Image 1 (spheres, one colour):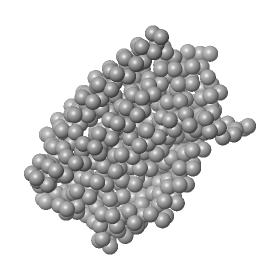
Image 2 (tube, helix red, strand yellow):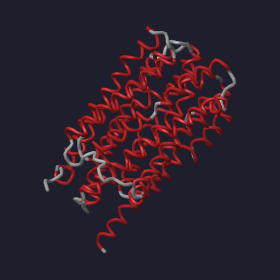
Image 3 (cartoon, helix red, strand yellow):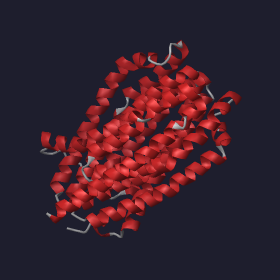
Image 4 (cartoon, one colour):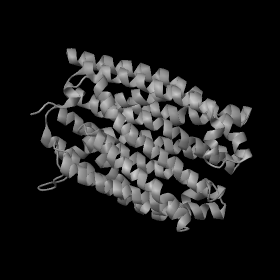
Length: 445
């Protein structure tokens, strides 16, 4: 048995070599999301509003895909850390089956539920029509993104983050290239944006299949003599379900925020959608660290190397604080230029500039919450991680936003994000310290 780099490589080097490729690929993906909205904004403001209203469903799809992927990632890494290759192989095969099933479920839900969902927010017939055109394509072919993300997590679990970067980066570049072609040259409008998205996901999935079969030696995709095992599925979803809920909660947060903001006009919803795209670009860098940290912590948890876990978490926190502070500086220095990327009108600038500057203050505590939540997930404390996210996205944020906006106005209401993330940061540190104490005590026993 050859040594795995997650067990022997110096921690700082390991975190960087694992996270930087993932970070680059996710930044490219985030860049695509921004470019996509920029192109849609040039179709019309109604088109941008429609795509913004569809965003929660897409986020839920990605949440289910990524949550299942977290379960695959963590369990594969843990078994590889214990040198249980056959069990890691079984997790891989089960994960791919579950991803295909998830894609089929969302195709059915999209077919029958798109109109109902859009009517929750608006009765504008044009916005509903544009939203249906966009979302029906994304959901009916969602199996591509589910399988793509499963292969991303397989690469991360085996320590091949560079291949992850190639796979995800090429998919995002395909999206960027074909967006203007389908939207403007061929005249498909918002349909074109959806087609470009699905095309990128399909090509990324195909690249992932090829790379895994040809380049990754730790495990192989082999369904010979395969049979479903409920115990393996349970293991994946013991970690995966809390992770799904953690990421899905963001969608519910977006839904509730849109319900609050629609009272101030469709333009305010569009501003929040733009902020969401811009903040995603910043958070993708942290999510790259986050996605690298989970297999590192899981592997060393399985190998009983608690000292390496602590080092990895602390170094990841340092990197995250630096990145998020840079994001805050960007939000405060050039908010007008950021909004100009989306062809913002004077009215949109008036709403958007103070919103971006105020919410930008929450970036550092939010990044800390993301990293500590990932560490808790990987060590098996998924409920604690879920509690942090519930507080961040719903329990604190939504009531605070409603009360502050209702009593003091829209501009003051944005500070709910800052207050929420700061309070949750304190909770995160307490839960992380408690988890570390429990693991150390268990090791001593």
